[in-house]
Length: 494
Image (cartoon, rainbow, N blue to C red; front, side):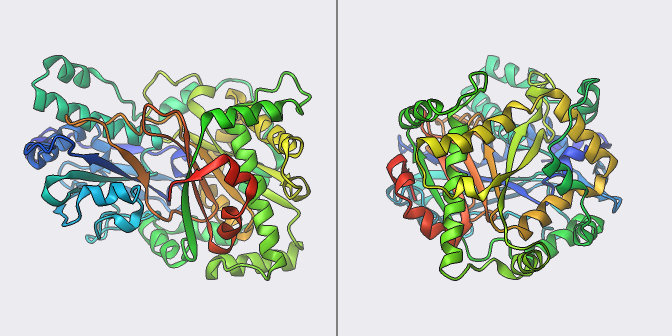
């Protein structure tokens, strides 16, 4: 740690409006490493700790603190005389690694206190929001190690997050194996934290945004304005008390890529636009949006569902003012790096933008078959196909002109219980961090994230299957588990 502190230079990183779009959320993941060889020198704690701080030299932003202007503008301040050091914890457990393996890594088998951060970004014990939380847990009889890593969305998205964990592993492996070439490659790896890259990469042309996106970000919302005005620490306390994760259930499924490809072929037979690019993940997103809408319909028919105090009040008010919902607000997250042609620039800031659209419930609630699924897939594929540079530029223009608008989608989603957020993380480097004893056997996020959140993740190699994390209110999830179409396609992991 002292070596890292000695190298720090004071600087400030003014965050881009893109950084604040999910600023109230964390990026928390667990990495499960088995000690298959039963080696006494398996992932030594002192080397893990030392190389963490070596990796931190390349990510000094994680030792900064947040300074907010109260208008949505936030800066990360790295002050060598007032560092906000990451939380680095170590512990041992009397739970053998095999117990977690037998439970397929279900959270009920985890050692107590494994996750040291939740879904919402909140202050630590010292009153500051830590920009990195690490917890290294050595399992019984050195049978394995679990590493929990959390970084707030203020400073990274999935690309920046997994790049840091991979870097830490590479530096650790290079030191343990005395691999000079590997150490040199890690030292030469470039990371860009300059938020100005986004603005400099915007094209000159613009494309009109979807009316639903404009409505969400520019509509009248006193509650959203108040939340944006709060400091990051106060906002975290408020959102924590709002109980966004109350009565929430998460399940993890595995979808065979071969089965999904077969379904994709069946769906494409009913899509008449030959120029439309339809990915298998588009079909998967459309299927999930349909079955979630169908589950909500069954909940309404059976007497409703609990959304927590915050969501219940907003939903009730919305129904009184606007009447019953006729559309599902579908929020698909897309990476701007490709649209702005900066995928090769190693940009570590937030590069995700949400694409909001209104899907008619009449389409989604229709019985699921290849033809009805094609209609929903058509909507999803058009959203992704439209996410080019000019659209990204228009979105950045909109949020830059209204830096406090970042809380509006959260309030909108809470007001509309059928809303859905889907993120495709199958391209992220979940299984790349090798600390010298091999790759993790399993990687997953915290047990319950926030309601109506769907994540697509890669399977452990060499499998090409898609792991699907679904987090919904418990009454809605009950109907998902009983959905015959889904049960034929997906296998529940836990």
